[in-house]
Amino acid sequence: MERPIYLNELIRKQHNGMVKVITGIRRCGKSYLLFELFCKNLKKQNVSDDHIITMAMDDIEYKEYRTPEKLYYYIKERILDDKMHYVLLDEVQLVENFEEVLNSLLRRKNVDIYVTGSNAKFLSKDIITEFRGRGDQVHVYPLSFSEFWEYYQQKHSGMVFPMHFPIPNESADINSAWQEYITYGGMPGQVVIENSQDKSNYLKNLFDETYIRDIIDRNNVRNKAELEELVDIVASDIGSLTNPLKIANTFKSEKKVSVHQETIKNFLDYFEDAFLVSKAKRYDIKGKKYINTPMKYYFTDVGLRNARLNFRQIEETHLMENVIFNELLIRGYNVDVGVVDHSYTDDNKQKKQKKIEVDFVCNQNSNRLYIQSALSIPDKTKMEQEQSSLIKIRDSFRKIIIVKEGISHYNEDGIYIMNLFDFLLNKNDVGL
Image 1 (cartoon, helix red, strand yellow):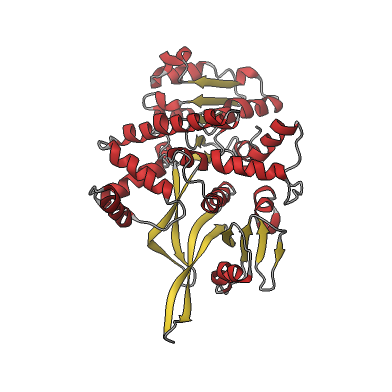
Image 2: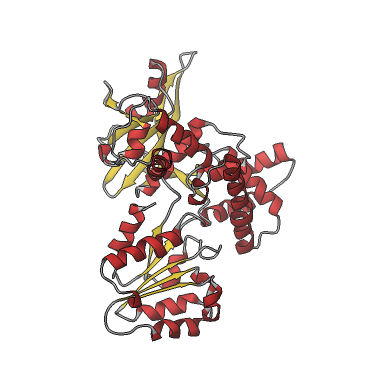
């Protein structure tokens, strides 16, 4: 798995005078990216082995260097000359006050620093602040569908087609790959497992023994049961508008437990800080302003979400929406949920107004896209329903409905109806 998106980002950031901080949910491939792929690339650049300083701080071999002074002087002694040296540290959070070591190394002009970490503290999204403005984050996600599809082809046929290879809609292979992906997700550790039961067990254990434990340890959570109940509620309602008050009411009505809204808000923040979930805020497109609540939550990996629910809720519509959301994040978009005003006349001929939703408002620099996710559009009524909010947006940015079946085309209203696999595999289509 070459992971060119992240490797190219690391290469682009070489020698920028900052600590390259590789973040992401645990077990998504950060260490492999750094120690295997990036090291391999450095050697292609003719960097000699003695100018690449690698240390896996969770290895017993480096246990004595988990104090800042010993680590600093160990690295310093291996800086041989004025040529550039590359320092690659894995699990650096095991070093007490590791920020001091990295900030000290930054003062040397011939040192380029790359670090990963995977405990709860290091997984915090605000870790960059620890480096006083001299940290540069490279965020790694589980395998995207295009990455998974490339591996799937290798596994099943021994052949690899380019990611832009046109895939017929009737292709059994890609549909089988899609079903596997929306069931078990893209965590690299499970992708290489053959047996479905072993995949399930891997994901369940990862969720319970790694993510839940990290969140509890980092935040000193006292009521594990409430936190786990909240995980289940969020997992069951991916893509649904919610807020702490609504969730508190769910606890009261369904669980017969009273949980304060502030506690729920804190727990949701903990999930985000661990990169387990991401949220999409509501954005009033015409008013050009954010609406504080409610909002939507999506899982960083749909396989982890399914494992949490014991694979009981494999609803393709919601999982497809989650996959599209993650793909947009991978491509560097800021993603919100859009709302537009809709006027109508009710059965009593009274004029009414309501807000209707655009699944995703996607911004990247000056580029904007409006996207709806629809598993299928079998008839005219469904088409009108899906595009009604898009038609009410009067600006000139692209408006897209992504569907699983059919050929990509513009309809008579100027909406681009885009095949799901064209979207997931062809990144340059219509600016995506």
